[in-house]
Image (cartoon, rainbow, N blue to C red):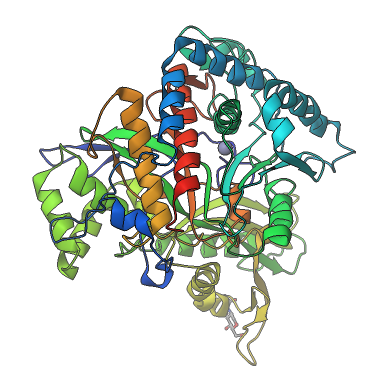
Length: 587
Ligand SMILES: *[C@@H]1O[C@H](CO)[C@@H](O)[C@H](O)[C@H]1NC(C)=O
Ligand SMILES: [Zn+2]
């Protein structure tokens, strides 16, 4: 997955959240970097007609003590025999070796995507996707024989596996082919060469072994294995694999979405599963946190222009001096994070609070009270925002990340500019953030006698003297609204099905039974995936691929690796998902 900033290369470390260092319990919540929770605004309540799925399978109803109700494990029923026979196959060492070869081979075709790539057909670096497609063709022969493949914008892959019943909305599985480049200066820090796909008997190593070739190859391995068993879907399955997700997603995901919209229409998919978070041990319980929302993004460029001239006869304030004063104003007025019920972050806190075995009792009680008491909600907010990571996930952030001005030490700068980067809370919007940036600078524009144009509107007070210009713009038009929040309430059949599938996968991979070996919580992503192009296709978008946070690691940095057994578990997840979605009549 990509970080929100186009092409930003920082790794996505596991965020270790400590609620408060000063408390005796000193509990550390480990939350995957990508993640957090979810929430369900009533406006987004799913209106899907619920067939036998929910009534037949025990979904526990919400009661006072149950602030994060859980679906039961959901095992294929009509496809039970097929699923069991596949399960036996997945348990064999021979299958693990096959999976290792599938993923290792994919890692061995470097598919790096870079910022500022030239057009396809001109910039030779795109051509690496040709050999990658060749590899897929050789490795998944039945898939390529059976599914219809369309190449979108040269390298985007769109596979369609036609179901027998056209009336059912298809399942959309997404992944991306590209990987973040390996920094040449770090090659010697890799345990095994970054494109070796080396298997040491336990882990598969290399760039892309988790992000996101494990997802892409996991999906194809699942499809190929199902085809080997002669599975014929009732419901159409569509696979969409972009190829520049790590940079802008404009050539891959964006173009794929246009083709999908044209062919299938708006709100045409039952469920979309893309790369995202996985499961982790939190407070002694295993909790899966599928991403059900993504924060928004906005870069505000602040530009100050004044008359130039010789530095020997300066005015009291130069463009740089004024800009500095404006930037101080930003940091003096941090955007207050607000914990709100119904937001993804709040829902994660509720789920972790209820289901983590080891959890500070006082905090658990506070979370429970916060569901109805505003006072408790504010207290909980105060506890959470003591931690920088939680604070950032809860609210809209600001960070002054770029500054420039001046050309010579003896010339007055005619222009100085800076960029303030925002990650926007799910309950806010690009325009709300722009309004706030405008409001905090108004009095300073007046004080410095500047005309003021904010995001295209001239808001200079009438008759005001002007000694220069202040302009706010959406830098490189990068504004992105927060993603619509995926419905996760009791009536949302796709979410319940996903939750039940996660549990069935986890249980069967370990020979367990029951619903409480792993819990499922909605979560918010701190970064974006190709799903940012897919909002219109369905409201049921989840960013999840059943990776274990402990066993798969080092996304975007040196020594990226995945435990082979976890990769097999991912294949089991996609297989169980395909079969469960195929047989449900609930959506
Ligand atoms: C703005 O203009 C007023 C009126 O001309 C002047 O008194 C004041 O000093 C100016 N402010 C600055 C910061 O230059
Ligand atoms: Zn990725």
